[in-house]
Image 1 (cartoon, rainbow, N blue to C red):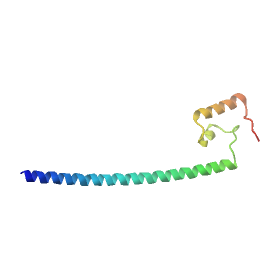
Image 2 (image 1 turned 30 degrees about the vertical axis):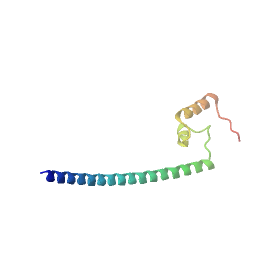
Image 3 (image 1 turned 90 degrees about the vertical axis):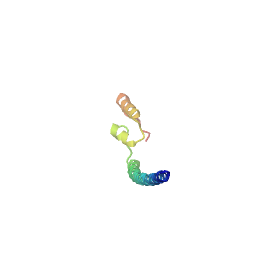
Image 4 (image 1 turned 120 degrees about the vertical axis):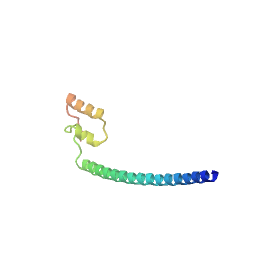
Length: 99
């Protein structure tokens, strides 16, 4: 009787260890695939940003003519800064150029 109980417990422990290993491998596979997708997305976003900023270098954004969406696309101003700039332009007129 004790022997059967011992073997059942041993078999149960082996099964649990096997299932835990399978679950860990599935988790590792999932994390690897998720990381690959994130890296691909980040690379695409970085390439798009590089193209956008290269375009801005050739044709700079005119702060006196741009709208809120143009400023948002820059990615360097928050909503408060954009609103402040547009309010300044509306209140005081064009921003002086240093050219």
